[in-house]
Amino acid sequence: MSNFRKQLLADVSSLCRELFVRRLARVKEQELVSDKSKADILVLIIELDQLRRLAPFPKKAELDVSPLEQLKTALADPDHDDESGQQVLLDWVKATRPEADTAANGGVPEGATTPINQRMIDGLASVRSAIDRARVRLMLAGDTYDRPAYTAARNAFTLSREIYAERLRLNQIDCNNEDCSTLEQVLKPAIKDADGSGFPYSIQAVADFMEERTFPDVETA
Image (tube, rainbow, N blue to C red; front, side, top):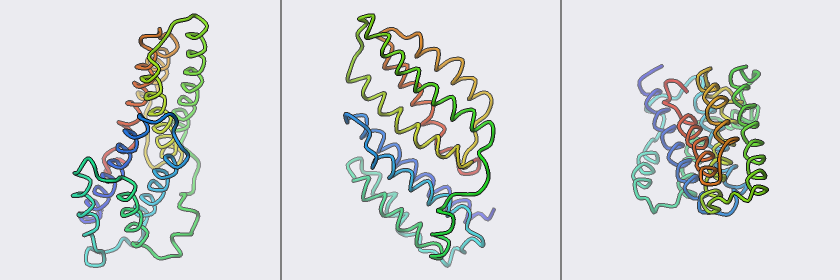
């Protein structure tokens, strides 16, 4: 991988990560995670993958990277609108490849999800069910929990799961046996056994786990 390609992919991945983190912060303050919040980040994942798979990859002289530099600067301001930033990144990535490549295969790489990635995806679905069961258990027991903290954690879990699972499904990133074991043997049991005071934080722990793994360094992505 050329130094230019490596650095460019790292820059774009970093911007995707920043926009994802910003969207996470926003949904924690909302009542529900909208379909738009999910779709906005999912489309970035597809476009990032399209860029990574370009062959031949554009030469440095062929690309104007100034919009990326401007976006980095803009996102340094915590009050910068993440939706406008996302549009800048989306437009730039789309402009890097021929129109035929944009439509080809909908941006989805061929090949089945790897078994280890599918194990994690299935595990996350099981955790989602565990959250629902634990919530019912606590309600029936009259064991109250902090509702605002629960809503924020649930929304973070919902958005993180949507994005992390999609990257796993498309084999854009890889998990490992240790990660799967952590989910299955530590994080899920913590939710199943949580009392009211710990319930929201056990959900947030899974959201944090996924957030840390959704946009790894581009060398390993």
